[in-house]
Length: 285
Ligand SMILES: NC(=O)c1ccc[n+]([C@@H]2O[C@H](COP(=O)([O-])OP(=O)(O)OC[C@H]3O[C@@H](n4cnc5c(N)ncnc54)[C@H](OP(=O)(O)O)[C@@H]3O)[C@@H](O)[C@H]2O)c1
Image (cartoon, rainbow, N blue to C red; front, side):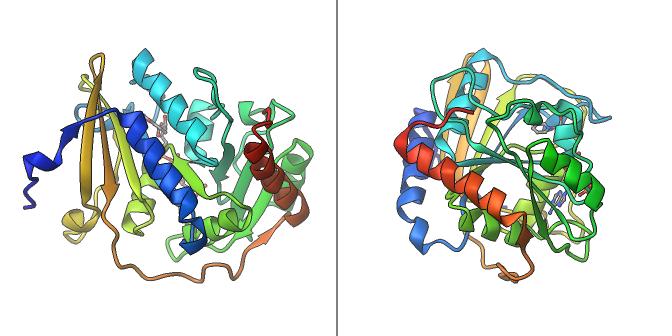
């Protein structure tokens, strides 16, 4: 059992802490193998992020939702799993505060991405959909026509996409910081592979008994998933916000850039122009 020294936990201006972390990550970008990853989501007191059947659950209050939009505006990219797109049909943009929209990225091994998703409604938004080499080429063409960029990466033995390759590609495209907004399968994958750097959770005072934020681990790995340090908290109304740095773990580096193929010209153009426009402060999505 790990004990937490109470003097290391402090009430803070969370958005200021997140901003400093992200700015530091931008400065260190050249030395990083992959983008800096912030994992963030809202959960009930019992750790649920959705209803048990996966139905969307509104957990954040107005203040914590505003914080989420502030955090989105700080990151270059925002990544979710395909089930989140199918279930919630999110826009993943910045609406509640002033700021630039992050580049949407979806991890979708079989191209289940709905062609009528809200992420494809804005002609200025070109979501990057990461998929497997086996995914249907006809669906790929439909999604390309609808404005998406498709990136193919290899799958792991578990049948999931190799996130090391996904992040290597995103880094190549100039995306230095990625906010991961769920769902549970993506969060679990990131933690088990040691790919999270910062953790930011909104805790809503409700008991739901639904889908938990992290899948149960077998073989007594629970203690090893991640440890947080530099913990900070802030109350936003009745929601408790908790932020921490994920302690780096020694983990096996995967094949990084090998095996990544992309709809290169379009993806590269889109992400590079996103980066340049961000630098110029002029991107409108
Ligand atoms: N409360 C919150 O803040 C919050 C935030 C986001 C989502 N949610 C909820 O979370 C639920 C969805 O979570 P979920 O766990 O079902 O799905 P998810 O994490 O959104 O998506 C998981 C899917 O992504 C694909 N995938 C491909 N490579 C992967 C990899 N390396 N790691 C993980 N996934 C990979 C897999 O589908 P394929 O096999 O088809 O490739 C996998 O089943 C929804 O009900 C949503 O409402 C809540």
